[in-house]
Amino acid sequence: MKGKVREEIIMTTLLVFREQLKNFYSKYELYLTPVFKFLLALVTLVMINSSIGYMSELKKTAVVLVLALMCSVMPMNFIVFVAAAVTLGHLYKFSMECALIALVVFLLLFILYFRFSSHDTVAVLLTPLCFILKIPYVMPIVMGLVGTPFSAVSVASGVIVYYMVGYMIGSASVLNTFEDDGALEKFRYIIDGLIGNKEMFVMIVAFAAALIVVYFIRRLSVDYAWTIAMVTGALLDVMILLFGDLMYNTNLSIIGLIVGSIVSVLLAKILEFFVFNVDYSRTEYVQFEDDEYYYYVKAVPKNAVSAPQKRVKTIRVPEKAVGQQKRDGSK
Image (tube, rainbow, N blue to C red; front, side, top):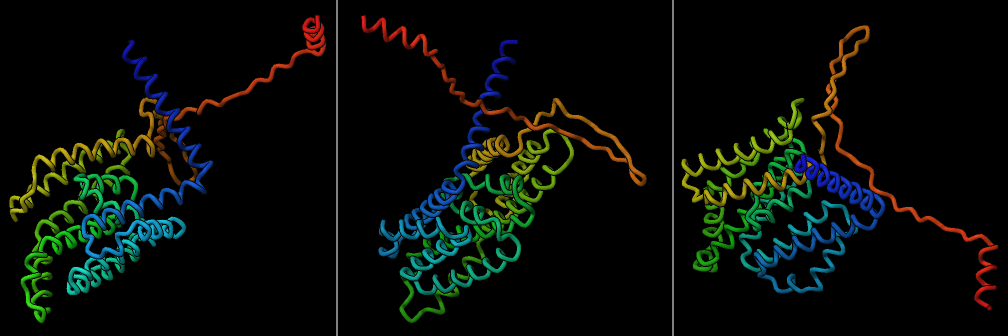
């Protein structure tokens, strides 16, 4: 009994915190949105400079801050353009052939991105960042919960960018062995390496399949659909990646895959609390009809509490009491 009461108190506290957070954001949304875009752009640029960092001019603090400030007042898609431009600048300093190939890949990805998932800017930017942070498996689960099946294009774009840049930087020692007039050999070497990167294609297939499965399961009219979708998507992701490692020897870290998948589900549960927190114990089933149809409706109430409001109570002292206090004080 005490444990149940304690759980209710903790849940109520968390719900109050969520409502206070939502009220705070809605009140200061005009100021918080540019701040979030600035931080996202800043983290993205810092990650790019630390991972590539061949052009020293782009690594200067003033340049990074100016670009991040520009992104804070521009649409979200502008951050993608800035990130791509900075990446191309570093690659050009490293190798013109790498920059040209990256430019072509970026143009193709932009065409697919703006055609199918132009609203998933965060997915394009966060996918490479999650790879760097060793938690890439969270992206297909999260985007399956809050996005659409077309969000797979954005996630796949982030995967391609991460592996492409990583392969180019990892091949620096080999590319430096080519002669100055061996541009054609460099192009062939880079393109063959990208096309032959089995790990990248297995990751794209796994992420796309997991995202689509999560999307369709979380839309089902069953209890705990979001939780079932998370677990199913994570398991499917693990199975496809393990199968791909068995087939193509992608040198996948099994321990990293399992730990990353567990962490991804936990992060997705936190997202569920803020986006889709419902109380299945109070589910109601409603039936009604009109001239043409019978309707069977399942209604699941949201978990919500009102944030406590601070009230300031003014105590007025009667004038007679004030006068009496003055007379007592004078004596």
